[in-house]
Length: 266
Image (cartoon, rainbow, N blue to C red; front, side, top):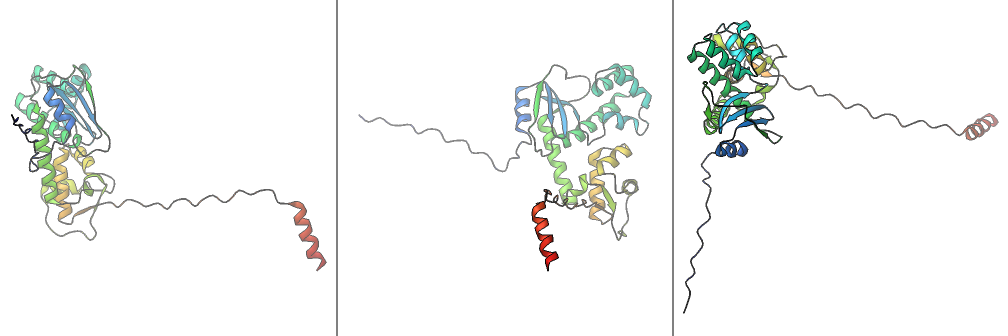
């Protein structure tokens, strides 16, 4: 009597056309519906039940800058709210509860800040991320976004910048005017960026100075670079210091005397 062997099921094959997760850790946390703070090299993501409720990055102007730079909210009002709460997200909720900001305007600005900082937080990193489980982040009155939506938008933004100008050096280096300058026209928005190019400010520094989203400023900078108006400042190459001279040891006094006597005898 022969026994028929049932072949094992085929191994799953990953669809190579499907986009890869920008952060496998973040994907796992979303699947776990985790709550806490993910710290990455260029930013921080606050998760509540697996959704992103807030994002911060030193490269992106915060919610406070976006709200106060153009008169949407008085700076003093934000400072009072920030002093009474534990962080910018809670300060925004306090302003919403107090009626100092229209709900629609605050929600839109909050999402702008979240996607802006999230873009930098999900940038390629040379260090692994760290997640701290914490009950602090929570789903509140301000909108949150699914992890997959943040990753999709981040990938879309990367592709857009590459299409505008493929060299990413202008994103992070100090910017200078091109020499000779391009003769093409610039939009009023690009002119505001170009007027702040001084060889010291980076694109994100210009964004903070203007009170604009950093990614939108990157778009303006790459368009200006593609048109020949700006260029990144080349890094200064410093020559290595010469090696120190060999240590000087005490000479052989007797040998010097013999040499002196021999020379005098000539």
